[in-house]
Length: 637
Image (cartoon, rainbow, N blue to C red; front, side, top):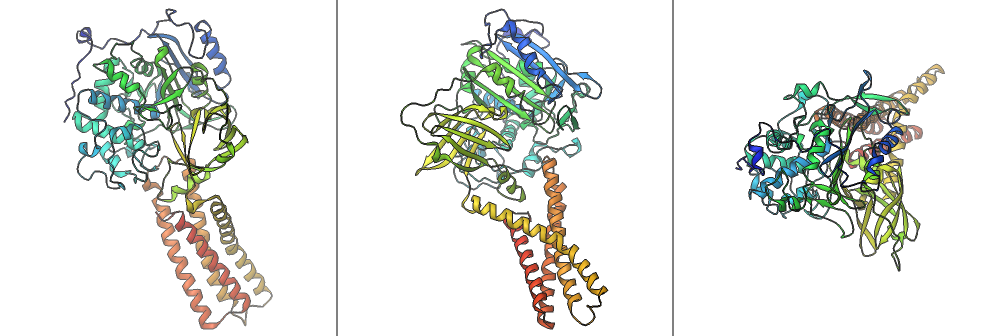
């Protein structure tokens, strides 16, 4: 087991009751750097940010805290809008507590590098040497998973959608229990596909726990937050250890239309190292500053300068000209190389970007779900984008790239596997060297700058998170699209666009039939009885068989529509919350099969008229189609 002590870098720190702050809150720039990396003069920075924020605060975003630092000095610290809209409590970077979301992952990778510096973790070793025997039960490949695979999000795990986040702290389990409950299947060979993974990060945190002999939140508090003077931050997503932070935590919101916002819940996690940290923007800025040590100087987080240099170096990239991953940080293609991470929870969005060469960092935190205009747009406006120059000479035609692609980060098992196919990435050639990318209702144009390397030229700000795309080709076809935060892959053989469209059409027909027939049959039977045409025929018995068959199918349709709506409205759920829908599918399917058997027996026993036979056959066929689609899309698991 790792011992928790780390050698402190500066002797003076030992003499202080609290660690020395990285910066004074009232500090201003000393003029060493006069501009942001994008070229905004520091003298005009506040007015620039004010102007940018005014376009969104109150209309598309409730509130935000912004911290900008350069040369170890605060050059802007300002809140915008409200932390509590109903009570008009303003957002403040020094006191308002926000959820970090996935920015929390950076503390895990920091802890890993601290232990690697001490020789207690080998980044290239099989992680199973650090785990209990048979801890991972769903591995598919013999190739070992290394800590670098976890850092680079290419360990090969599918996305498991349940028991990641909760709306109530009562559902929180220990980190170990959370990992066991939500273990995903391994679906890719380690090192081959980048699929962003919350599980990978929490698994790395669990390894830190085992080696350090203390919970990860205790480790982060002692070896990261305390060292940096981050007194307004906690890794416990419930904030149970810091009731004072609860009193200052912002309310979360969801955008409900122009200048309209709906309150949403706070985020609670068993696998909290992946996204459960809460703290102020000022504290997050202190964390960012720890990665901006002067050349040759160690960070307060590490004992040696080379550890910081290693952490900030690229650990994975699909192409030499494409931003990749720097030991858990995502690289940003700006005027200078940047590194950072975004964060999203049920009701908060955030971003931190660090530009080591300019010793610059920006922290943006909002109390709104899925916010992109500020957390990505302002970040890009301050850090700048590298200049795009269209490639010269013979370049591959963009027509080779046309098609639809599915995210590598997706569930492969269970009914949630259908959702990624509703949000395909579509590539359409605009010219020989330009493509249009459409994703989840957003579009942007990309220009080819080098063979199969495309850079974003214009379009939706949310796609700033995908500034560069690299297309890996095999035998003249796209084998893999590498983008920031993960890859996109060609559609699997059994889920080509014709098959997907055919499935959708069959599903729509079956749903419509099953919902309408149970309504139509009683009306028809009533009208027949009124005309006294039911006395001497077998139609009523046939109607009952078909009626109950289609009614069971209609119940299945309603059950799965409710399930889909529940997951679309909030996919942060425990599996136990939706298990009743899976169980109902089993029960209703069994009932439908039994009724089909009864109808066939009745047909053989008494015979049906041609019209009766046609109605029975059609209803049975529709039921078989519907059940088959539910099986194919795994709605029984």
